[in-house]
Image (cartoon, rainbow, N blue to C red; front, side, top):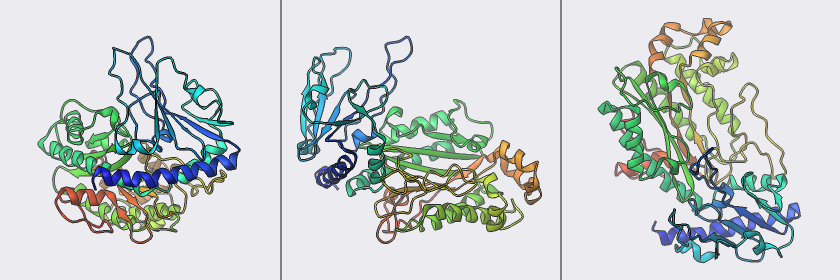
Length: 454
């Protein structure tokens, strides 16, 4: 699809965003919206700013992700207005006014350095301000009732948003392929991470989150945040959780790789089969809490068949044993943010669906609807603190500690796909992107798998 086609999808997307805003404003008694892009905070005792991360509410309206100080103003019955700052700052390159096709759908108003954005909506009535808390905005800032309605609605993506996420997925897959090759060459975590960015054509600050490139035991740290500059003496495993962004929309992909054949590689294959069966569960009407609990049963079965635990998945879940090896949720909403808003909401009024008892880290408890994009990311990890706790209570007798000791140096495994709920079979953005890179036709169900995952 070319950019003309994408901008055509943007038309329909913008109408949907406006309709949702109309309903939310009417329900909460506001007359207009003013959405600030935000400003990057300054570093302490310095004149350098931190990397800029745009307000997700702002980029839902316009794909402007790199220009602080913008404001999107909308009143029902009028086209959106983008207040775009124009400065004479010779220290930095001024941002050019948007000229892409999408910009023709809104009114772009350049702001001179002396302009005060607030004066341009003074006559709109009661205006809700949506802005990061550090922005100096005059008005009713971030009204909870309004935000809740917008968060609930945005879980269902427009076709424009899904297409942006398809493109983000293809960028991320380029990086994953290159980083896996770098691991096999024997380079360091840092070098593999740098090659990832180069393959995606994005700077680190443009990534939707800090990429995780974890070798060996590091893969047992769920949000491993370091990058060793030297390769490890022995190369055993790679867990790479890394994304990309397109027009402000995120891809979030994880793959695990073994340096050679053996028990760890076999465990990757077994978890991959379980993960694909879980992706098939992403269908309209499915309660995502049930997908999470099914994931625990399937992970338990994988652990049992691998000889790591001594009972099957359902019983292991009941006794709290699967949580020793799989302590996080099966996934989350994905879109404008990696962990997109509204995952626990039961309705636009703020009611929430509770998490299953004993599963405090699940980020999504809603029933799936067409257009929702979610991650599906089962894992098996050998985390010292969790293993120590299990070894000190009744769970100890159900775990084969010799098998654990053999696999502990590999850290862990996570396999994560981004999946779109449709009215029929789910669309697997991740598997389709790998198939596309390999020059294969991706089936509508996303059932293709990428070669060389081990």
